[in-house]
Length: 333
Image (cartoon, rainbow, N blue to C red; front, side, top):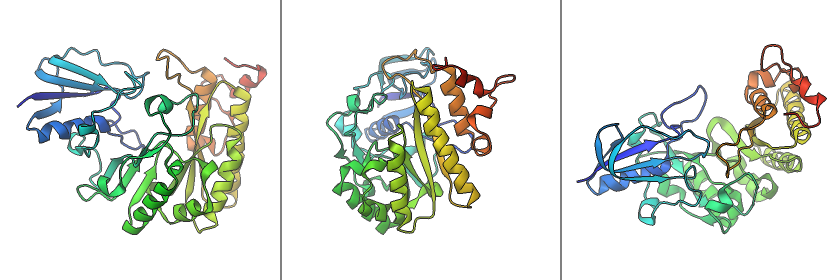
């Protein structure tokens, strides 16, 4: 029997901020199951205890590394935060996660992927490097339904791009009465009427469907997709991911459109359309820091109570500073 230590460098599975989803490190969960099935002892690594193998995993390259001293015969570092091309061996990857290592995980919720990859090549995304070759089927929803779990946080990068496989899985999800959250967002540009009909029938966790709205051109696609889904009886909310990149004016115009859209929804007592803003992080440069305007814009967007009643120009993120100052420069720093 070997002694195995685990290190979750990002730590998103242990600390829950108010209103946020707990995200376990799926790779570590699968590693835990693999070693337990082989009779090994598995635990979170403790400094100064000795281990046969320590696995440390990091998803984001900007997460500060764990510099704690650990004693082990072998230390294996993996995850996109260390190596964008790293992958689990197939005999581990095909396993379902051992959720017991994260006691805060809801007992009715599973995490995973139905597909892997994405046909798009967005410049801010590591998926084309990590999972090249477009989108492909990966697992069936029933494979994830272990231990009586009926809610599924699915982290597919472009589920709808799998076409007929997505239709098959949607039908099974609806028939089983499962609740899902496609939490990496859907591609509104490929929402056909068939997809819209199915998406209107799905039970969505938190009653919300997510779309990506990373460029001004995607606004029209999102509006069209939402209209199609609503036409099939959907009454829930929408959650639009918005990437903040280098063009201040484009980002503001895109977000301001969504701000006005949100105002319209509230005025007419319609379901919310919430944007969520993410400052650009260079996947090839862990030292990259987003400019202050991106950080301030993200704070404004993501604090919904402020976003609903305050335009960005009137937002004061710090004492003595109003964001209208950014409009005095063509390229705010």
